[in-house]
Length: 354
Image 1: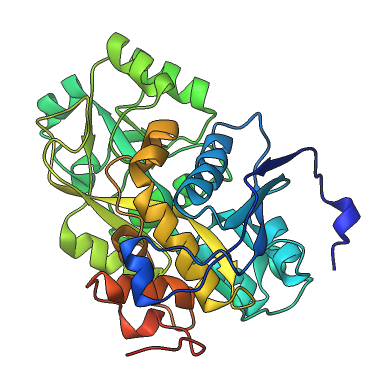
Image 2 (image 1 turned 135 degrees about the vertical axis):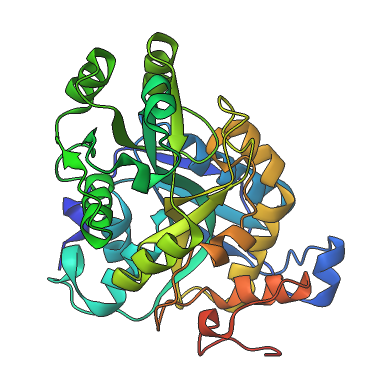
């Protein structure tokens, strides 16, 4: 078990003073029960990370929309480090979770093997979605009629940085469909240089769901790019081969720099707020309610949340794997909002109508 002292806790940001409140029907109309006091610790990334803005925004909207709740953002590691601290009841929830992390934690596999299985882990709501995006030189796409992944057959492609999930997924797709793409793994800089020089026609890169990141945008200005994806049937086949390989449909106009592209299926990676069943249902309900009320404020502070619904997209991005549960308070809030909650996502401790 990783001792608490070994986790880097460089800074604490205390926002607000107050407590969590009971989840009753009246609360949906904005009432706050100040008689109950809860102090929550939120696992955050380092302040030097761009993601830190999400943690600050989340603690801010909880304080604003639920002044009886106090949240302390604690800088530290990533999802697995936060899960260890939640298991030890040092943290209450974390900004760095995902279905893949939750699956490893609940089964005691991968990076959580030393700690052993912990089935109390729970997902909460969306932080952001990135995609394993396939960029193609626009001139090559026109010349070779490349309109989807299969159109890259026998072409040369940089599948991503070696050791990344992005590269692993693209190589696996090439194998599953026997596409015959010639893969040339390299660093991002080397891949971009090869694309500029025309030695490869495409590259895979993790990207925001709705826009180019700065590095890709700079490349696009020098060497115009387009984007290709998968068909719905191909997405189903890849998910059958790897249930954790989730997809998102990018609609036409869904990529800011390429308004003519879409719709297409792209491999997705979601990051969600994560907690555990140790957090009472009413407390989780209040956190979820405050986050939903302040979602536009979070968007302004952390652009990757823009265009995402914190609950609906979290449900959609959770693969159909037995045992991946959402926090009971999130389930309660979703049901009160008329959102259909898949039965497989409802935890056994949930108290309320099914």
